[in-house]
Length: 267
Ligand SMILES: Cc1cc2nc3c(=O)[nH]c(=O)nc-3n(C[C@H](O)[C@H](O)[C@H](O)COP(=O)(O)OP(=O)(O)OC[C@H]3O[C@@H](n4cnc5c(N)ncnc54)[C@H](O)[C@@H]3O)c2cc1C
Image 1: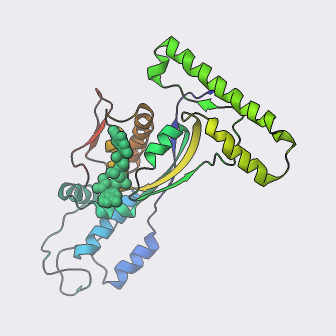
Image 2: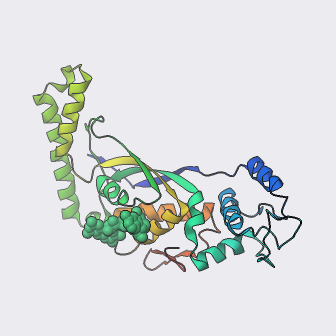
Image 3: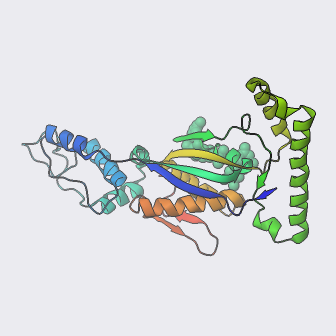
């Protein structure tokens, strides 16, 4: 058994604003008096631009700019933090869907991945194939709740060792190391994995838009959620807050419970 210290999320990609394209669009609609807020993240300016496009609320009404302004708009809210804060308050969260973040979650179990992939709206997944990857050693994270009890921790380790030996035994039974045909290897690897534990450490790449991440963080850092998914989603919450402080301005950590909570849940 290979002992996993801790499951971990790595931010590997996020949406970016293409300033040239946005500027060209703004020029073509009549140069409204608006520009991206320097204090905001790229993605937050994209969200604001998407929102302002909806109501032509780049600036107060100006009859000389009919495509950029709107006679119904006498004044506009300035600044990205205030603009997004108002979007969150009013629950018009669909514009948050224009920005996405991609994480690699490493050393997470199939318990974790099985729970994560239940989130479908606004999400994309690529998961390590256990049909291809042979399980010579079984990486496993022992939850703190088991580590806290030496007898339980030992039972964990014993069972994993037993299952690891089962993998080796199966490889011996089928003379796996002498096989050359890739299709047979894949078929057998796929069959062997049925004897692997659901706690096996694996990797998943997950992309989600910011509206979905808000929802997932709320549900999966809740005290009612599972130990491992709470750990990983807490890491994701911290990264989200750092990368997009305006979009996550209403999210805070409850130090007592470890939950990340929102003033405006499910926007
Ligand atoms: C503490 C906890 C315990 C759980 N226990 C169980 C359990 O015992 N058994 C079990 O099967 N699952 C369980 N789940 C999983 C849960 O039921 C959801 O499947 C999972 O959390 C995904 O969330 P979601 O449904 O909000 O989907 P998401 O894909 O994250 O969707 C986000 C939101 O979009 C909307 N939406 C998404 N898809 C649709 C749709 N098809 N139709 C209409 N609206 C949609 C909903 O408003 C939804 O909340 C548990 C989850 C948690 C957090």
